[in-house]
Image (cartoon, rainbow, N blue to C red; front, side, top):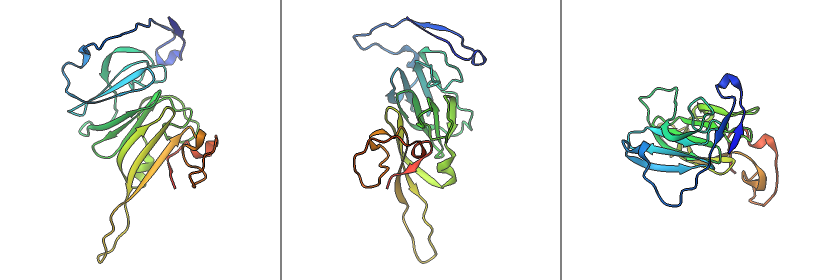
Length: 212
């Protein structure tokens, strides 16, 4: 058993968890009515993406990684709470240890969960984010996101940058890779030459940074 205390304003002051091992695959009943096209696992939580664009989560929620505006654990899959125009659907997602990324059909990128190490890309002084929040960096830079991925404490995004063109010339989008989060072991290629360094420089990882 484990006991944890959280901010009373968030509705949780204490909970206990009983751990139970499962040695054989079991049918997930809380997903029966959905046709899932992708599953991703974090350290102790799981995301499931349905064909209709519904995103669901279950598991540990101590860092808000279930995206339901609480820190209450859930053994059952429940919808991730997007305060967003629901005419746009989730088309891809990724899990880190305790954080998540979700890409929407209009190109918006949402993040939630643990953010103290910059893995949410929302800027400095981050805290746990209990509800999906858009990274406005990509929208403001007119970057079309193509692929998303997460490591344990960092995130990586591949995007196409819009390039200016005139009537007589057509330029294809330029593809770039952006990363944010914990910068140890030169995950973000800080020196720009592919040399291996063990570094932790906070100015590099709280916002998306283009890999050179």
